[in-house]
Image (cartoon, rainbow, N blue to C red):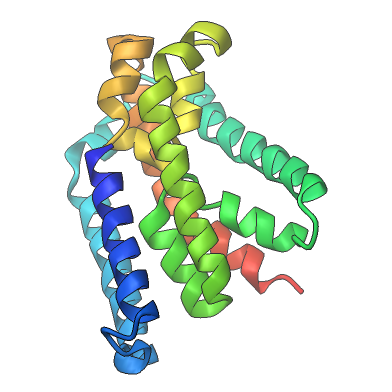
Length: 201
């Protein structure tokens, strides 16, 4: 949760400094943001590839483990469709793009900002930060009322790192590997799914 609040704090600081003209908004050139996105994508690949647990998580499980990230993807798609029906002036494409960040706020918001819309990128940042914070705060209640797998699905891509400790505490140590695998799969899929949705007409 601390990491999410720090990210949110820096975002708010940048917003206020630009709004009050303390730092000129055109100081950050478009190509710099693109380079930052490419570098972030590179670091994600390095991080997943260098993590031995990422491949060890596959051992000892059958194909049923794939149902966990699939459930998160399907559940998120259904959830944001409901949001789309409730909120006026929100397209289904925009709603699905935001939801497909699966809690990976840094990457999904940058992809949306750079390739589609800056305003929607802000929405993606806030929505996905909120997903992580809700998981950190409510994992025990989610596990109690919706089952042991539910906190993992709630955490989305963060179930492999920031929300893993609270998920393990709420669901049990036997779910740690499932949570790790789930987070790795979604981390890999976030840029693919977000980019695919944004490319739709």
